Image (cartoon, rainbow, N blue to C red; front, side):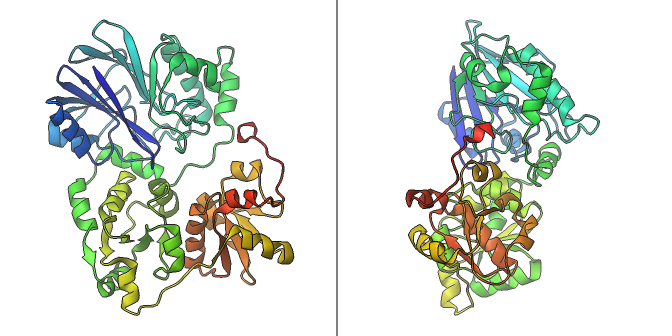
Length: 469
């Protein structure tokens, strides 16, 4: 028996490869399915099942493409309704995989079709659970994302999740290994640990949601408290996961079409495409196509695209460093953005060589900011998340979270310089690009963000642990 966690940091997502005696099950695959197929071929094995823990909201699964390419059977748990061929398994149903068995445990609450898969080894020992978004390490799935539970409140879904955890998961042996669907950084939970594998016994000690003495009322309060609105692209991804989607091979072919600067400019004007610059933030600051949005591949790229561009049908034109174009198209498609129309051939340098107009972002080092700020006291806008801001900040700073920056546009002054920062410089450059696209150019980005400011012993508020907020 072989178990491999295939973790994608950009999405904080875990897919799983399980192999036994020449048969393979893939759990929650990503959109690009070649790695799973190649792995099975290398091991002279055949993919038999594609197990989906639920209809994902934060990414588009590769279940349909993988089934088309391998003939494997797509499996969902009870309550799932799809517009493609799939087996809807019953609660406690056993699936045979080589010398092992996989038991279907219906664990509704995050969504009503949410299912946990229990792996039983050839000796009959309950070995591991693959929990999807039902149980994370340190947290549980948020109960406000179910797209077809209009007749249920998030509190009622949380009550259902409480019962699922206590009736289906907590009675299992403490030695069982927990393989979750996501880790820290995912928007599907709020308090996840950085680890991606643990034992159930340890989670019973560490995870607030698994306290033995916890009442259902306490659980509902703690699980629903402090939930930020989900990104707008989430329901669009759910729909794609239920209804189906275009083959990624066609998406790659279309999205990696090279366009010279004149063709690129014409395509932007004709289609209304978002010009998305995926280079490093320092490169973007030095020069970029006017009106382009920066979201770099070096950060949590796909979730920020989903949160800020939101409409998966929005046409996109790419500006990337040479060789990064295909990766950008793939990572866009993971969150349902399938309408990339091509990329700027030769990158930004080709644009500049054509003597076309370009823009820059004024940036200063943290040290220079300190010197200027202590004298001039110009406005400072902190684009980190509210819990980061409340935890520790510059006392005079205002919080304008990047996730909802378009709701804060009126708060930025239209005259006089103001500063923008995040934790390390990635998010503040995204914010700067959005503000400039909206016609707000009187900003200065602080390089290195709050992490660098703290090292200079600037006055900050007293630190408060985010978990206590």
